[in-house]
Amino acid sequence: MSLSLLVIFLILAVLGVPLSVSLGLSTLTVLWWFELPISMITQRMATSINSFLLIAVPLFIMAGMIMERGGLSERIFDAAQAMMGRFRGGLGQVNIASSFVFGGISGSSVADIASLGPITIRSMTSRGYPLPYAAALTLITATLATLVPPSILIIIAAAAAGQSVGGALAGGLGPGILLATALGFYNYWISRKNGYGAKMAFNPRASARAVFRALPSVGAPVIILTGMFSGIVTPTEAAGLAVLYTLLVAGLVHREIGFRDVLQLAIQAGRTAGAVLLILMVASAATYIFTIDQLPRKASSMLSLFDGSGFMVLLFMGLIFLIVGMLMDIVAAALMLIPVLMPAAVQAGVDPMHFLIFMTAALAVGLASPPVGTCLFATAYISRLPLQVLIRAALPFYAINICVLVAVAAFPQIVLWPIWLLT
Image (tube, rainbow, N blue to C red):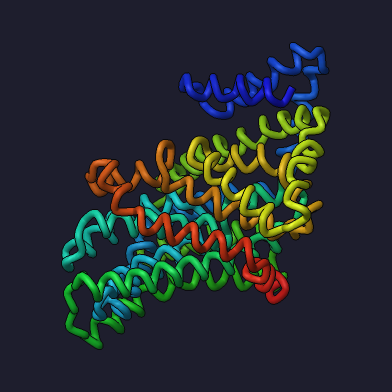
């Protein structure tokens, strides 16, 4: 049954049918063919979406859109540039730091590309960085938003796996910091080696002014993450705070959005969130077929060949995550892989949170990889670079991502220490 579902799904997806429709039709076909109750589709879909936690998804999406429209993301970049831009390779470090901070508000890699991408690429190329390098670095730093809390993918994956959303968000902090640090070291080395980035004269007054202008914008992730990890607010309430705070800053402090803009952004956020959550709904129906077909047990039996080594199990799963993440939407991929592989990983001694965050980190690579990487195509569009040129320039960054994945698989503490510390 499971194989039939996957084959039908892949055929429909290759034909260009939207992923949510492909998954729903393949599930319906298998239920009908094997004479299983078709009513399970509606039951599972209704149950999966009946969660207070999932309200956070459209709210964080809207917060990212407000930041883009309201000028918050631009001010964050200007402040980072004022502090680090004067050093050799400094604008590359600004790119990494601003994506890390922006990801701490929007939770969306695509939002990072849309808002910060044009600013970072234009600034880097004007300071002597080659366009392919600037675009490739921007592409990879955008994936930080999928790891750094409040990652939308982590929220959905944790809710689907029945794990603590707050704990999972905290777990993404370690790999996010590790990836940002690795990218920073590489950027510093390659910039010094090739002479990237003209040194900027330091102007204390202009730098202080840029930092002062950005203080309200930078306050957003501080308030959101502090409130969430201190237990004062839930992730959903933190998402509401993110929308309220960014609205106040963009509307009253920066005065760059009005009431009509808010209505327009709410509609856009609803459409984007609807597409994501529809995948969650139909994937829960497909999970029913995986369960009755005992696919998790079969996967556990196959992975027993690794003799209970959690590290080897994660490495094998990482290969699966990378391949699947390159071929399909990462939200759909996560929702289909969690019920199949998570029980097998836990049986091999892998902590559930470790599995979830490792899976997220691996799938995030798919956002920047051909043939369907959303961020890859978005970066190629805003940089006006041919796809093959951008991919070639990104090869060293792909290698860095793989090294980080191996480190996360080998050392669970990278994921677990922020959970112990913050929750």
